[in-house]
Structures are given as structure tokens and as C-alpha cells.
Image: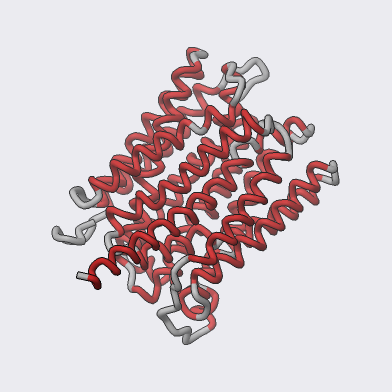
Length: 409
């Protein structure tokens, strides 16, 4: 009886510490990412918006695979996560300091790239730690992951209503302090030692994860993820600006509506993930994403703010059902000694390659379609929604999934 109680206690402690780590992990970008377009515009740098949104994906192309490989072969994932957070916090403070003191914009871009490279492995490392130590990941991981969403929501409200920093570099300073606090709090995360042995330079650099693409389902999954994140970049990059055009006075706080719906979706996902195939959940996410962009397109046609806000609210459901399900998919389908690299490849795909191309595509569409009088949003959101519809068809037709059973996907 005592041994069982000790196990329950250890599980609760691990759950609490992981939840707190995710809280800080989500809170830090919640201060500055939704506000970045308006911050740069207020600094007279509206022409740099697309480039600034490319920096995060660039950093996520360089470091996540290496971070995953180190966690699989060399360094405990929890210790590496702490180091990434603390170093990234310093780089982020430096980046917004350059912006605040009106340095050459290239200083801001360069230091933001440094931050992105240091922060790139963080999400994958934290997922590896959580999925390693949670005894029931299908039920518990969405609940732990909800901590990051709550942190993002709180940051949005603090930015708009307490800091009054919807268009100020102060939002970046708040994010840097939060990231540093998250690094300190993460010292208490459970030990997650490497489980593999590197046998070649490809293993050391994390390139062994590309071997996963030899399997049909993995190839389809990563391809769809890559293609999905291209139009998804438009949400973070353009939705706040569309809110402003439609008359919303607190764009950052309004964007946080997506995170409230994300929290609800995570509570629901914790119950349905064990009842439905992972393919089904991924298709739900893609289908609802088409509807979500359709709502924003309708707002562009009618100039009714409520339709765009409804689309923002639905975004949280779409994001949760795709990306949280995807991380559990990788934990189920990948060998233990490759899980860190698999999460790194997922970060490379979902936060690197896809958003990088998405920033270019969405920036190009914005320049071509959005007119000074505010017209063009109907065409922009409709094109992005059509891209997601293509992803839905690709996954529905070509993804097979595992055989029915406990691990059916």
C-alpha cells in the first residue's frame, strides 16, 4: 500500500513540475509573438514584419535535431532544457533591447536569430521529458500541455491590460524574464537520461531521424505537417493585423481567445484520444482549420469583427487536435532511442521549414492582396483555407495507420 502511495505521489509531483515548466514555456512567447507585428509597425519597421516572422523558423531549422540528438545520445534532456531556456532568455532580452534603443534593424534580426537557435530545441525536449515520465501519456499529456496555453493566455492579458505593451518592446522584456524563470523552475524536472548510443556523425547531428521517412505513414505525416504549417503561419502573422483593421482595440488580448479554446480542447482531447484513431483526430483538426479560415474570409467580405473572432476561437481547437495528437503519435510509433530526434524532426518540420516558407508565402500574399482601403482579406483567407483542404485530402488518401488495437493510429 505504501509503495502504491509513493508511486501516486511521485506521479503527482512529476505532473505538477511538468505543468509548471509548460506554463513558463508558453507564457514567454505569449508576451511578444502576438504583438510583434504591431510592435514593429509602431517602430516604423512594418517592412520587416515578414523577415522577423521568418527568424523563428530559421532557428528551428538549425538546432532542434541537434538538441534531440544530444538528448538521445549524450546529455540528459532535462539539463539540456534548462540550459536552452536560460541562454535563450538572455538573447531575447538583447534582441528587444536593440529594438527599444532603435539600433539598426539588422541587430534586432541577428539577436532574434540567436534566440531562435537557442530556444529551438526547447519544445521537443520538454515533450520528450513529459512523454517519458507520464504513465498515461494519452490522458495526461494534453492536461500537462495545457499549462503552456494558460501561460500564453495570461501573457496576452498582461501585455494588453497591465503592461499596456501591445506595440511596445516592453513585451519582449517581459518574455525574457519569464523564460529565465522557466529555466530556473525546470531545474526540478525529473532526470531523463539518454537511451541511445551514437555510432556515426549522422547520429551526433540528429540526421538519423530522417530514416523515419522511409516508412510510408511517417513520410505522409511529416509531409502533411510541413504543408499545414505553411498557411498556419498566416494566423500568427496576419490575424492580429486583421483584428486592427476590423476595429479591435486590444489585438493581443483578443488573440488569446484562441488559447482559451485550446485549453477546453485539451481537456476534451484527454478523453477522446483513447477512443479514436489518431488519423481521425488529425483529420478533424484539418477539417476544422478549413472552417476556421472560412470564418475569417467571411469577416473579410462582410467587415464583421465577430466572424474573425469566431475563427480565432476555433483555431485553438484545430491546433490542439493536430499538434498535441502528433506528439503522442511520435511517442507511440518511434523507438525509445529515437524519440528525442523524432521530436526534433517534428519541431524542424512544424516550427522550422513550414513556418519559414509560410512567412514568405503569407508575406507575398499580403503584399499582393491586401489593399490600403482594407480589402483583400476574403481572397487571402480563402487561399490559405484551400491549402489546408489539400492537406486534408492528402492525409485521408495516403495515410494508412497501424492495425486496430490499443496502439491503433
